[in-house]
Length: 185
Image (cartoon, rainbow, N blue to C red; front, side, top):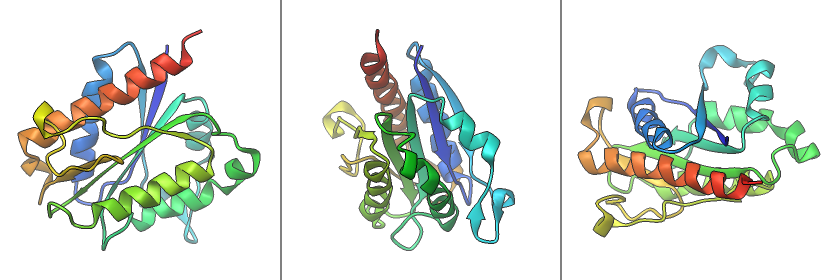
């Protein structure tokens, strides 16, 4: 059975709310998932530190990264986590794992693309296999047309539109189905 890790930071609760819907999409498949919330308590002297959590991530077949779009990029907390993964870059510990990303901002664009590009660059440097959204508005998902990753719009956690909820469910299911196909023996 495929194991998907969802690694995210949520400042206001909106990214965490979208994470819930992505998880629901994974639940529609045979895959299992683990949630890894990046919090300030794990950041010491500017660097994320939680060995038990990162060791558990190593066991996942896919990693989905989530961040709010802050000032046109990823949150400092997720960036701190990425920087702390340098030892895994040296050993290529995540090489061949499936990777994907999602982000939320209060505007339809909000420079979400830059946030998704930041995350995809990290994943490419780690040797991961990138999976995008793979659907569009005619499928009743992806209203803002972000194909690199999921880009949702909400001014607060309880204001995710139904189409973004559907997009989250679709996205989780797509990632899980992809990793299941790739990990079949």
